[in-house]
Amino acid sequence: MAAVQHELTLSEAADQLSRALPGHRVEILQGRLTVTPPPDGSHGLSLTKLCRAFERAGIEGSGAEWVQGVGLWLPTLPEDFAIPDLSVVDEDFRDAHVTKNYYAPNVFRLVVEVTSSNWSDDLGPKVECYAQAGIPGYLVADRKHDEVLLYTDPVDGAYGDPERFKRGQSVALPGAIGFKVTFDVDTLLDG
Image (cartoon, rainbow, N blue to C red; front, side, top):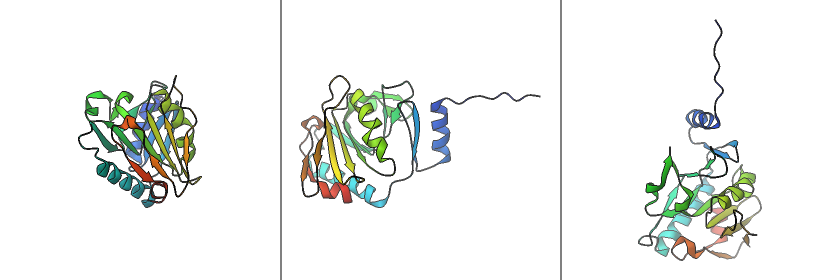
């Protein structure tokens, strides 16, 4: 008797990998399945300190919230989605649920990535995907190249050149997030 084989869709493969590799981040970017191992301690601490800065700056009451590891449905291809390290979203973002744990891009005000082993995705496909999704701000703590990049205000599905920040400088996030916050580049790079 012959066995019937079923070819998995990208979404099915992503679901299987997510179950098989707990703690890993599984994403589909521009039709390509990516898997990233769990972050290191400095990565996590960078995000913790950024969230503290958000709290000190008054995110509460601004109509925005910060969330870690929530899915962003991408308009690039039908199965595309990303899971940013950190996002600033509309307070009522849960009303924009698309499927699984993915939410519509229109509720995202800022996405943040701290580079790890997948740094080329953060600096390449994610820049394009987040711009095409219309995300007003994309902040990258590029630990590979020791700088912070800030992409803002995409036009026709593309960001312009990023603002680049080096060690010893401070970054002020765009007003689109709904509150004013500034933080040190070194803190974001080092945790």
